[in-house]
Length: 153
Image (cartoon, rainbow, N blue to C red):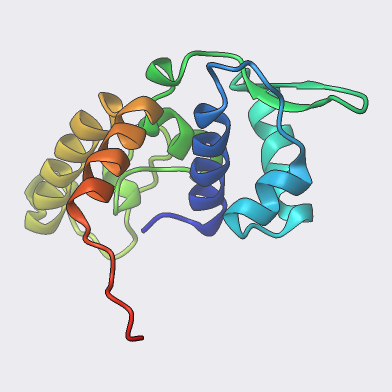
């Protein structure tokens, strides 16, 4: 399950991705209001993303945050790892956050570990090739499929 921090980071990055062509920085308050993210939490998230080279910031009246890379270059797997930790459902199959399971007698013969390992591999395969641009494209396609509700008059 994605942590709230990761969900907010992705929402904020998608807002910035929508403004990427104009190269226009967005203020924290604008992103927070538009995406429904608590401002203080968003500040910490954007600072962390800036530290990792995903976003840049500009001071002043026309300042704000902006993407340092093209939306096609920012993969979900990277954002998840930077903001939320492991992609794996169990620590004993995590690539970057490995920990042995205390309940497990032997990792080599653990059937649950074997299944979760397959899930991790499939997840990484999908998340590593899915960029912010891909998500925006999906949203565009999905919005065209959704019919507006008819209102009574």
